[in-house]
Image (cartoon, rainbow, N blue to C red; front, side, top):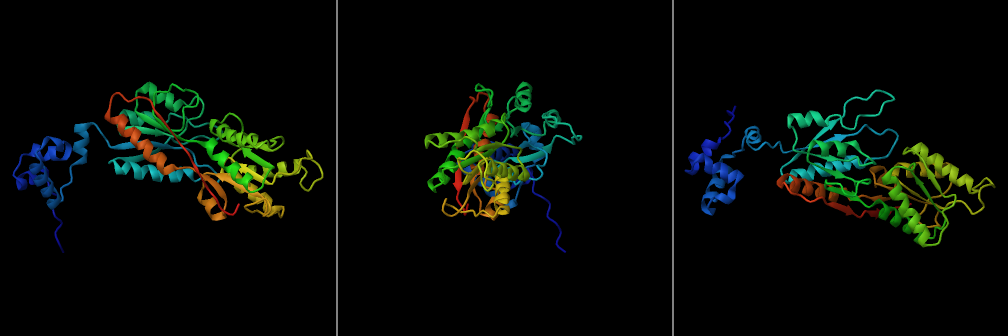
Length: 356
């Protein structure tokens, strides 16, 4: 049995390269301080010996953990929302490219009927200096996370616009939901649909309101009526199905009642979850689904989840990989400078066109 080799130390590298320990340290942490030939020689020995710096000792010297904190919210039941999973994977990969890792944490258990504490978990990590900075993903109106972290002087960037604070001092990256929904509405309009319904979330969600604005703008530009063609419900499959049923019945589809303007022939939804509910209702009614008005009902979701891909659902795809890269770039700038100007990046989504 082969005896395990003792890991090489900084002293081993210094002795083999014929330099001081400080020179080896500079080759790792401050290579610009060394002459090119010295740096090349030290790096060759590091590679030869397989030397890995002691990260624990390095953290003590630099006061850097190389960790980025990201709080996970409660699991969302009865939804098709997988966007956060894709975002977390993208963030981990982007952070790894610059030598950081992502530390996931939760706000702790929440009693039934109670709302989670939006700041739970942050203070423990701040006190222990376990992370260098945070990525915040909830940017709803008056979000206590951004307010609390700003007051504590904790470095962070946000996935989402500071909707209620145009003068916010933290960097942010967001996806233009209105542009995505507008593209979705234009997509079904080009395929011959004129009665295009919107199923979104209750008013008060800035993200939901922004997405609805894209539908309303596209309808107005084409001179299409929106009367009786929208519903605001919670983000569940059952709610999406019920909303579709109500809209179809209210406009006289198969019931002889309604407004008399005709049933919707297409649905644009604020999420894939709602769109899956619409598909279920259309299937229950025996209504065909197709890419054009002649081929059947049109349905478009938002997020391009794995469920949408499996079902062949056309969906607005958020550029989450680009979001993650932009967030890490903003964090790198934030941690590397004491004077970073507030900045925001707004990315445009694309449309993944499938059978619906």
